[in-house]
Amino acid sequence: MHKNILRTLPVAAALLFAACQSGTTGGNTDNAAVQDSLAIDSLSNSVMAVHDDAMTKMMVIRRLRTRVAEVSDSLGKAKADTAAYHTAGVMLDSANSAMDGWMRAYDMELTGKDNAQKKTYLSAEKSKIDEVKTLMLKSIDDAKALLKEQ
Image (tube, rainbow, N blue to C red; front, side):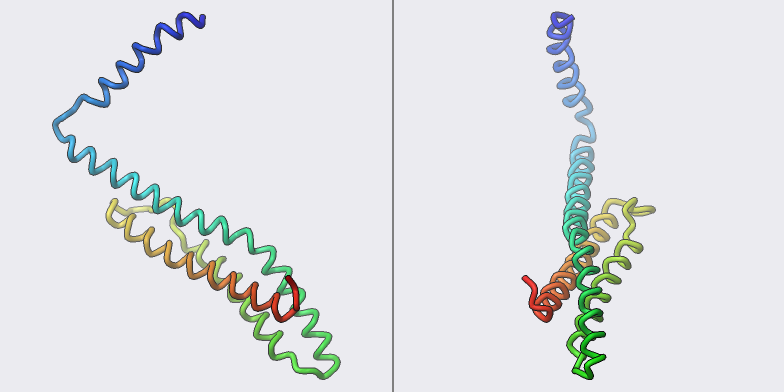
């Protein structure tokens, strides 16, 4: 059986090579389409990489939000100033909402868009998700500093 596979591999490789080389008419168009497709895939992967990294911070945001609320409640009962904790809570909520909003609005299927529109859309979404991640990281850093956490 292994001998049969070894005999067919060179034939399959030759056929694949021939198929890739055929169709020289429209080669530039095919090449442009392939380049567009690769660019779209790269942009999409870039957007999702930022999203995936930012999503790992969601549990941290929720934990910090709970902790900020607990400390704020304790300080409020003692009639102490809770403004900084309120601000930290608002920022954490804002970061959480920003991620939720971005995910609801994101068109992963790129429905009804041609390649140029897909590239424009994905570039804009990359900027948006970068902003969301920045907001998330800042809200986490600020809350941790306020709570004196590492």
